[in-house]
Length: 76
Image 1 (cartoon, rainbow, N blue to C red):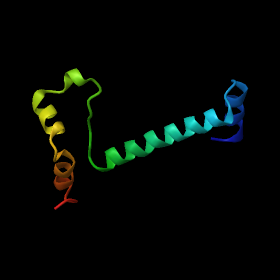
Image 2 (cartoon, rainbow, N blue to C red):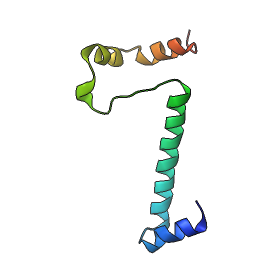
Image 3 (cartoon, helix red, strand yellow):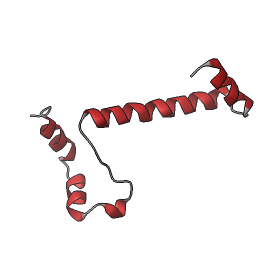
Image 4 (cartoon, helix red, strand yellow):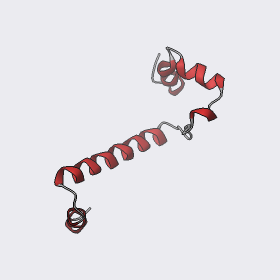
């Protein structure tokens, strides 16, 4: 992003705070995508209706996160 990009946003009526919020949101999504790709997660479910019952049971498990960490070798 360069000064001209910011100027175009301001010319469209956005405030500096709104631009800052947009930049932060884009940065967060960028970071999360890199974490997902870096840990090997290749798919996710956008529609709850497409998740089968076995997946829901696994996701609702109290050990879901530790099971994931264990599969990556980062949790004992």
